Length: 418
Image 1 (cartoon, rainbow, N blue to C red):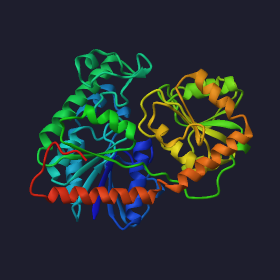
Image 2: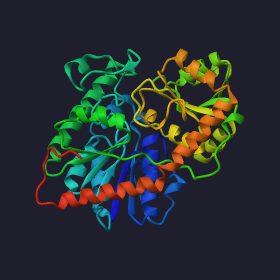
Image 3: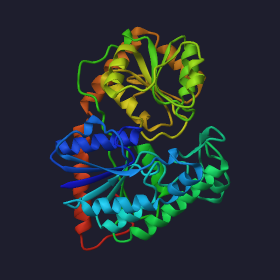
């Protein structure tokens, strides 16, 4: 089998690229030929250094780095991205059996859906966020600091000042969503797009939003890039750790404030717009981004727990799964996909994304016996049914086999849902 994987970058700028890159490696290790096509050129993650992985950069520019007017145009419909992708696919010595798209908003744009449809190959899309349905991608009201409850592209949605930047940005994102829907509706009339959901919660929310479209729905866990080792000793740690982008929707500010109230240090790995605010909170330490191996070592040494108290309806933050695999308790928002993997009071805690509720939970982490018990239970439970890279690749191979078989079937029911 030959699989073409598409994403914006060849380095993990976020969860989507991280999963795309690790999927490529996992599939290659199972003997699958992989071509990774990424919009923006640049250094590649070492995970892609495998003889079974071919890497093709399309030489595009991140739309965030463009002048505003140019970024808006290319974000809505990037003709050059479509042309270069079509040429890259045509030039491959062997055509992929399946094409799998992970992210497209930063360089590829909805124009790539037209190319994928014309390819005639089965197409999968992993939904790391809500961009296939929601204009701002996170189904979150930034004006209200709360999850959205509106139907995407409904009159209420169009009128809502929900964008994190401005109404002008909202208008551009609405235009992108409209042309995206049109491209999918026009292009995928013979075969559906196979959508991969990474948590039960995100599937339950997205499936109704996408009802009536040419989609089949599947559930595949994201891979956890942690080699099995001895369980960590979180009771020896000193801090509550947050790993990721420092934004309010991800709850970075909640971790800092709740840790301060609980009398625990807070360790922040990453960067983002709240960095200066976090540095000003007593007891908060910000160390910037680190390589995955460094992060794992740091968490094993410093973390009493890893916290991910997202305000938005996060699909499935990888940091929580990685913490559980290492034997570190996790604290997650009770509205995030990660909560499905935490047994409240057994392997970690679930809490509403509010500083007071989190401070109460963090206070329980000051007890060494509690932290030790939670960490060991997290480790035991994770490794009883691990979502390893190999397990992820095996699930993808099963998905691709079903997709290719369906594509060869004499008829197709447009409304089919799996």
